[in-house]
Length: 231
Image (cartoon, rainbow, N blue to C red; front, side, top):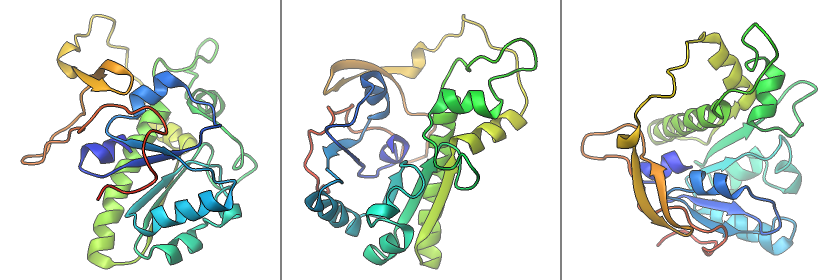
């Protein structure tokens, strides 16, 4: 979502007030995104989400496989609600097999799919959340590709990515020795105002002539925005 926001998308993160949050992760991943709360366990909340989706170009969701379908937001219902929608589904372990419906996050998937083991000693989590970040970048690229196809070919498009799948791909690329602790990265940082006060963040990567990716604002406090699109 934050990658798409940096490339000009109006991104609204839909969460719920009762769900737990890791505030440090919110500050990192919330760049350029508005944030609202919608209670999907109520009829009114589901109606509100349907209204949002009916005017959306993209839906990115990371509930466990089948969770949204059970409350009326399966792929077929979404395509009927908003023809031409791009649906991006993310999961921990994919959509087939005995682990498909398991909850999971980066470090757990690292340990279970083998990328945490370098062939010697005991397995140990990678020094970064490579599966989270890698899957996020791949999802953004897939969404942009699907949007292009929707414009040129029409239709409703669905993309699916999993942390386990990203881990398998990254592991297949082989390993390099770490760069060490003396890497200079100060030129990659910037200070910005946010709902959490003044923050130092990593600048958006990459560039496009005439349309440099950037965030219009810093991370907002969860739930501060109304469940509507920007006029």
